[in-house]
Image (cartoon, rainbow, N blue to C red; front, side, top):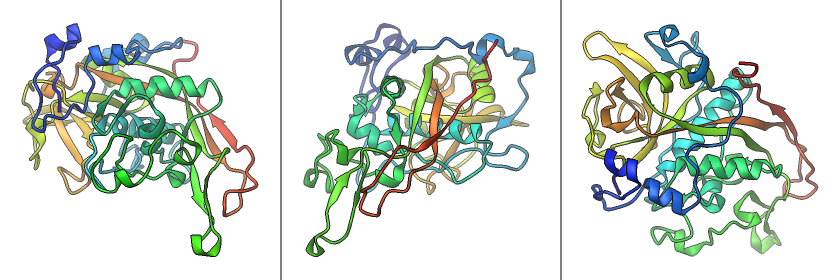
Length: 338
């Protein structure tokens, strides 16, 4: 993993490689080279522009809102084989959470397809990428009426076009219709076929941007939902509990932040969802000291607001035939009129 020091983040220069020598997070220079605009695109007032710092509570957790969980499932980016796709997991999980929050937790959870991002997102691969790039790509395709598909027609395979691990070389991972949303009718020996669908449940993005600093992050999370942030993963590889306080040496990983809490001894901490599976950490989560830029986690975060998502599909045939456009629901930003 390639690490970005504070100085490198300021200049866009690459820093020393992490434990595996794998670049899981693009540097600012790499983002610029790939056309990523970290400033984002938004017109509606951001929570940092209108939420007062003194109104922030001591603790806030989207996993427990009056006893109701408002976040989506955790995943393991490293199976069925190793893939450095944390940037896609962090971005997509935070967006999925925001859709669940907008739906007030009602209905079956909408789980978005990380594999669609790997196949089509132009924001990275199994060897590194950009959370901000994911949101920029989603914003661009949203303007054409398209969006990120639900994972029921594109499950996570931990592969990208250059991957050589596991079964990845046995399949193609380019952005073709069958690598966006696909299904198979029956066994091949029975005359079955697999094909891509041209109409499918999906979610789109309205706006996206950057946020940093503990207060601004908290305002964004509390008002609109979880965010994706860069972090130094080295100090938490063997995390078993407590609050991580290491200052960090460089950003080499992307996670999502779903809230914050308060420890009588350690003080305030961020509630961080990782993408290493629920066998790791505290059921896939880690506590990171808040307000101290611990693990460099308060220096590079991204957010996106949903635009619309499929609530009711048009029932296609089992083999994927006879598909029409689905019905959608639309997001109302809390900053409207601010």
